[in-house]
Image 1 (cartoon, rainbow, N blue to C red):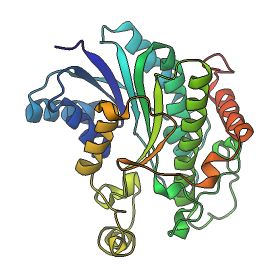
Image 2: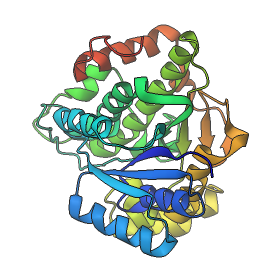
Image 3: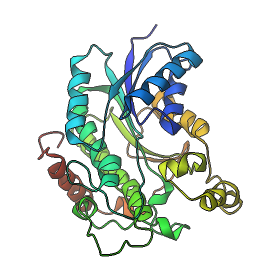
Length: 313
C-alpha cells in the first residue's frame, strides 16, 4: 500500500465539497481526507455519512471559518500540531454568495470576498511550506468570472483588492450587487491561481501545481452557494441548458471531476490552467491581464491578510 497522503477540502459538509470528499474516500485508501468546515455539527454528520457509505475511515475534521483570519491561523496551527499524514493537496472549495446589502466579517472585510478569496489565500500561503513535492492545489472558480458572460447580473466588476474588501456603501443597494461581488470573487481566484503558478515556477518548485476549476452551475445547491429565487433556479436548471450546452451540473458529477484533478496521473505537472469540468480552456482575457496586475493583486492580498510578504515570494 502507498504511504498515506492528506488532502484538505474546505466547505466539505455538503454540496460540491462533500461530493468531492466522498469520491476521494471511495476507493482511494492511500488518501486521508480532512474536512475543513465552519459548522462542527454538520461536518461531523458529513464525516459519519461518508464513512457509512464508503467504508473508509481515513477521514477527519478540523474547524475552519474563512470569515475569520484568526480561525485560519488556528486551523493551520492545529493541523501542523496533529499527527496527520503528509500534506499533498488543498481543495479551496468553500464559498458564500450573499444579497445586495453589504455585510462585513469580524476582520471588517466584505464577507463574500473574505470567505471566497482572502481566507483561502491566507490558508494556502500558510500551508504552502508544508505541502509535499507533487502536491496539488485546486481553486473552485466559475464561468461567472467572465465580464462578457450571458448572465448580465453576474458579470464581475473587479477594480482592486481594496475595492473588493471595502466596497462603498451607498444609501440604497445597487441592483445585483451581491451577484456581481460573487462573480468577482471567482475572477479573483483565477488571479491567485495564475500568480501562484508563476511564483512556484520561479521558486523552482513546479512539481507543486495550482489550477482552477469550473464545476458548472448547480441550481439544486443554490448556484454553487447562491440563494436564488425559485423562478431563477427553475431557469438555471431547465431553460439555461437549452441555450448553453454543458452549463448545468450537479454536485455528484462535478465532485467526481474535481476529485480526479487531485488524483489522476494525467494531470501531473499541469499548473496555471483553468479547467472547465475536465477540459482545459482559456479563461477570460481579464483573468490573465498583465504580470504587473497579478502581482499587485497578490501583494494587496498579502497586506490585507497580514502576511506582508513573509510567505512565498
